[in-house]
Image (cartoon, rainbow, N blue to C red; front, side, top):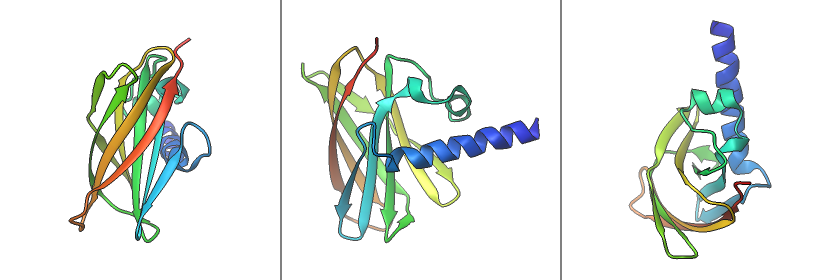
Length: 146
């Protein structure tokens, strides 16, 4: 039992680490001086069931998630992360980010409902720990539920 929990934890960490650095799923990175902010939006149904369970993320075709990782000079740092998403009809989605700390990386994850072919424009505000500056990153993602 302990071994299976360790494997799930390892897989979860591996997937969460890979998400902001992968070339797919609307991956972006934005640089602000010595800070790099990785931001990824994707449907939650692509997560492995074990990973979703371990991180309390609901897997569903009609759920999306955004993952934010902040680095300063190549090292992960904590941050205050807030944001919104809006679809093309102007409907606003308030993002509530949960902080997940794993070793030397901190992830900020928010989930939200999506509909088929919904395009969401995200605006995420990031204030890294130890910095008085707030940086705004933007990304756009189309979600498919069928």
